[in-house]
Amino acid sequence: MTKKELASYIDHTLLAPQAGVNEIIQLCQEAKRYNFASVCVNPIYVPAVSTELKDSNVKTCTVVGFPLGAVTTKDKINESLNAIANGADEIDMVINIGAAKDGRFSEVGTDIFDVVNAIKQEGNKKGKTILVKTILETCFLDDTAIETCCLCAKKAGADFVKTSTGFATPKGIAGNPLPNGASEHHIKLMRKTVGPEMGVKASGGIRSPRTVITMLEAGANRIGTSSSVHIIENWDESIQIRL
Image 1 (cartoon, rainbow, N blue to C red):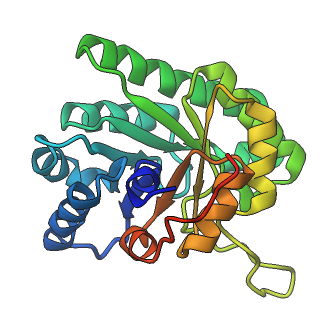
Image 2 (image 1 turned 180 degrees about the horizontal axis):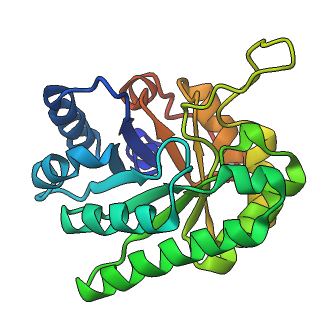
């Protein structure tokens, strides 16, 4: 896989709360240089990113209900519509993680459906297709819950299921940190559940070419990372990936 081909899988991401506008502009410049799939930022920077990317093929991506998912569906919809008005092309929404953890999957499904429906309708009004990715925060869910949430997202008409926000801090009984972010197991499970027609985005802790290879071969077709440039610069184009 060439560097150019790899770049088309990557959402070049900067969601740190302390990120300033100069860093965001640099992010956009890097994305245009390498032709990444999108630049993913917090909603406040969508206008700046959309303006910076207007003459490129790189999409403007943002997050809603981020990073906890613990806001009302109406809040997620309003945040999404505002982002679209500001130029967003792709929206990564955090599901109702608490409801998923409790097994209240009808609430999970309704939340996703209402947000996706509102986004798609608004996109249609503007004559553009807005991609919606649903963030599951897999580190908090068992395999059955992950499968069910994936099916909820698929039924709701979302375009992708996504592993993580990158901001979760799961802990064990003794308060010890537990694994977070994308894992090969979860990507395989998500791909198996949604089938070939839906996207799977791996995000959280992806910082090396080796990890990218693992995620792509497991079934991911989008990678979210803040280490995009490092990964591209250290990519070996002779690598054969089993997609």
